[in-house]
Length: 515
Ligand code: SF4
Ligand code: SF4
Image (tube, rainbow, N blue to C red; front, top):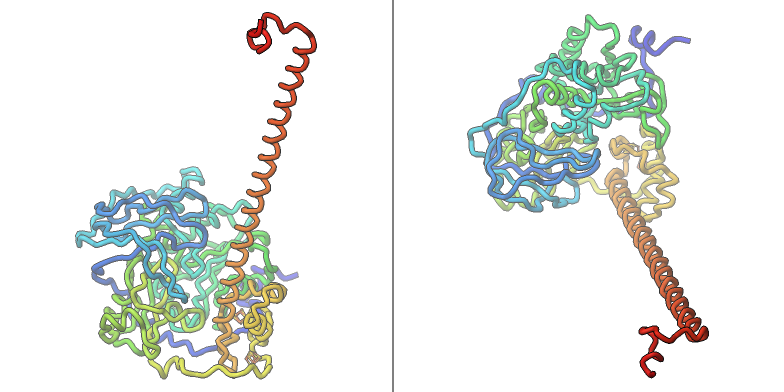
């Protein structure tokens, strides 16, 4: 049978189910270099920016910090620290609105830059191969690297996979319309990205490294091919453009023909995937002793005079980026509460969500800010009844039944949602894109997922409370039994002493005091 590598070498790939071809719109930003920006007046750094747990805050209000200084420390493997993106003063530590569809507030560290941009002392390390692998993993963990493709999974965990790895897949597909951040990063920093890929190669020792990229990025493809021409184990896999090729399971299917079953990690199939921007951050962490404090963000849409990719410090308010890219001046009222006609989307048009405010900060997973004109992305289409056309199921890359999911979500039938594998939905938005009834399907799935998560958290809490109650009841019963036993023994001893007639001379015996 033909091997995966033989197929790849012939430029042949597998097809994943469904998918769509929305207008690319990448031309708005893919012809300009990544722009450096001035320092914002204030940075808002959410304490947790990754899947897992938040780190423990280790700075105080009023403290002066240097660029790159850790603001939190991880006291759990699933926690990832955050760092000061520039030098300045910790202004406050408080709950602040973050990038979340619901307009959630989370604990944030507010940093006022001093303008000096003074670095903490760093130590370059070019011979990481001579270090124990655990030290390299620790550098990645301490630098706060989390998956930058959207999931924010702690990278040091994936870089420390113990299973035998056949394929390390580097996800450079960037399949969502408008977004060109990875494309530009590859074109401008290919050598740095390859340093990161080599570090992952050293740590994971895979048989092959497959870089998956769509054919709509010719310059980035050339740069990657040039960089890896001397290494036979690294294959640049140029895939036809189709959304959502960049989904983890979809890319694995396209490159290896393997289907990752529901609830199974790719590592169980000998596969680990990292996003290409994460590789760049890993090289920065290990070689340059530089934590993850900035990222490339595509700021695009026809409501901007200067759409472009920018290097944004983590914590930069979206409002600052919009102004830098020529969005109309926002007054305080507009900023606090965006009116409907001023829709700003975090992420792309397919997987992104409308921001409730432009005060929210850029975080490790923010790859795009979209300011579309109302013609570009109309948002006044009225949702009507499902006509059971089945188009949503035809395009669903996870092979789900989106219309059934929608009904169960509306009926809040959690049992049925679980049976329909709601949590296999990657929220790609392909179903909503083709829905002739304009049903915002992903919106319903997100709400349903949040409710199920909340319910299971409550169930866990209730189970723990029950366990605590049962344990206390047992302890009280045990204590009572021990007390009763003691009282019984004391009474028996007293009785025995009285009956034996040996009570004389016993000063404890009340009878002796009657003599
Ligand atoms: S595409 Fe829309 S209208 Fe058609 S079946 Fe799916 S949910 Fe219903
Ligand atoms: S959003 Fe979910 S249900 Fe809809 S097409 Fe994507 S994976 Fe399928």
